[in-house]
Length: 248
Image (cartoon, rainbow, N blue to C red; front, side, top):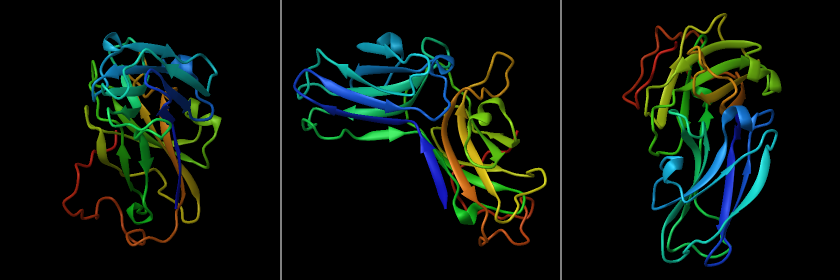
């Protein structure tokens, strides 16, 4: 069982001119350090903020809130609403999107795509795990490095400063969904222990993983799985599947 935490984005068209949007970031996030923003674009894809019709920067310590986009032509034009990080930077990235199509019904929830990470019970070995991630497919100015990190215990604010970090692994640039294998985990994964896997995007100015930019989490307990007992990453035989990326 995996308990997920995601950046939530919910919205609806309220009339022919306005769309209401609400957001909820992960506990302990710093929106200012993340460079969080909301934006709306005409069309079916999110682009850079320089091409947006309207932008609303999310203020420091504002973990949840609402915004109203107006002066729209709802029912006549398609729009995409996105929640992003790193506004105005080369690594500007959208982590959640809403689709406001011409066919959208007033006061009905809009289709959403949110970044998430999960670990299935049968993808956990004695010293490795396979994580499955998804994020919106969108245009980026430059690839924002996606990565995962494993921590002991449940999700808590100490994750933002790397406390109890066990292992990390990176995905390939411009990979929006797929799987990542984290292998040779130091001391292995202990049965009946609780761990949290986080999904992050971006590096700091020194090229290290930027723990300010957490966009999803998955907390799980290691139970008996089909591949756990007596199986290690070096002996695992994988069937054809999406590309798996090695640990850092």
